[in-house]
Structures are given as structure tokens and as C-alpha cells.
Amino acid sequence: MLLALSVHSDFASRMIGSDRVRNIDIPDIREYTDGYGNRITRLTAPAGISTFWSDCIVEVDGQPDEVQLAASQIALQDLPNETLTYLFASRYCDSDLMGDFAWKKFGQTKEGWSRVQAICDFVHSHVSFGYEYGRPDKTAANVLKEKTGVCRDFAQLAISLCRAMGIPARYVSGYLGDIGVADTGFDDFCAWFEVYLDGKWYTFDARYNVPRAGRVLMVRGHDAADVAMITSFGAYELTGFRVWSLELADNEDEAALLQSLETRPHPLQRGLGSQPGLTAWQIDT
Image (cartoon, rainbow, N blue to C red; front, side, top):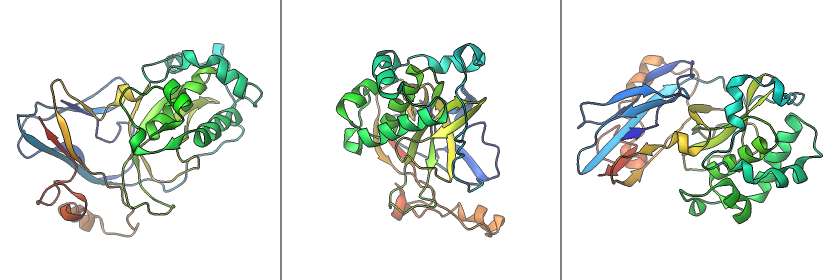
């Protein structure tokens, strides 16, 4: 099995504890970094139920996503070579089917930040969110037609429309807690996307469509196919899944925080087992 469940290799802020994926019954758990900089856990799961978890504390700057209204779109002939791959259609981002729609819908918008924001505004209002709308074969074209999806569908539709208009865009996923917004009472991973404008990658989020604080980058890719949470070479069933992403006070003692990882989050509240810390992904193979 391959698990994409660790903080991205580009994450350079302070970390307390370790975000490595753990399991008490599997001794040989290895990690490698893929071509996108994603840290991938590699293991062989035995038959039966396996519980994997990861828990650490990271420090982020607490600022909302950067907004640069004047960021301009770079002409195709001037784009850096490494960005060109994020103009191509991919498995779930079928931008090759969206050129006519994109140019009719957004062709009159101002190039650059304004155009990307117009795409986000459209996707945010056009698509209704619901976990019941998610499915593994749903492409951006399906999302555009069906007008429903989960966060990855919002991101992939926006990515596809950007690519169709010559704007490099890539898929991103990570932790996004309820920091600076109302507590939803349910923590989860979240998908958003990045676009290349004015020589820099910027964060956009068509699902929430407002700058958010506290994003913790886990994975990047062309679309969700590159960053699957679980890739299994054999049959499995995901029988339990919990995510926590909680804000802590800035003035807490580091030693106390490290000790707290032994008991938080309480398994009866957010976890899967009866032992402290066994709180993440339960898989029946």
C-alpha cells in the first residue's frame, strides 16, 4: 500500500512531534518522496484489520491566503518550462473539453488575478457541496454538468477552466481546520488549487472562495489521481476514518505540547480504538 498522508516536503515551518504514519503491527514502514515532492508511505499490510495514525503539531504564520489583485497572467511563450505540464488535461481535469465554454464564459474578464477569481466565483456558485455527491470517477466535465461535488470536484473544475484559458493550475490537498471561521464540528482534509501568476504560485479555493488561515500542505499534483490518500495493490475496505485539525494557543509550552501528543485527541471522542493515539485510518485487507 502507498499512503499519501504526511506533510509535504516543502513544509518548512516548526513541527513538534513526528507526522510519520504509524502502525503497531507492521515493522517495515518506509517513506519516499515522489516527483511532486509528496512524501509517500510504503508498506505491506497483513490480512485483517490494520489501524494507521499520524499526529503532530505544526506552526503556521496564521495569516490568510495571500491576495495580489494586480498579479498578471504570463504569456504562454514566456512561461517557465516547469509550469507547462500544468496546462495539460489530466485524468480528472479534462480541460481539453472545456475550451469553448471557458472562453465564452470568461473571455471578457481581465487577465490575471481577476480572471482566476471570476472562475472561482463561478465554480463556487455553480456547484453544490455534499459528501453524497463524491465518486471516484467524477471528472471536471461531470461536475460542470451535474453541478454537485465535494471539495476535490470544486478544485478540479476550477483547475480545468484555468488550464483551458492558458493559466497553469495544479491540485493541492491538506489540512484546513476551522481557524478564524465558525466551528463546523467536523474536521477533514480539504482540496484547493494553486495557479501560476506573475512568476509565483498562488492559493485559490473554489469550495470556500475566501482567504483562509491555517492551511497545512500535504500533497500536490495534476489532479486527485496523483495524490490519492490510499493506493492499494490488492483489495481493501476503509472501515473507519478520522481527521483532526485543531488550533492551539501560541503560548503553550513545547514540552507540554509534545507530551500531549500521547493522549490527544481522545480516542473516544475522535478516534477509532481504545488506545490513546490510535486515531486515523482503519483498513480491512
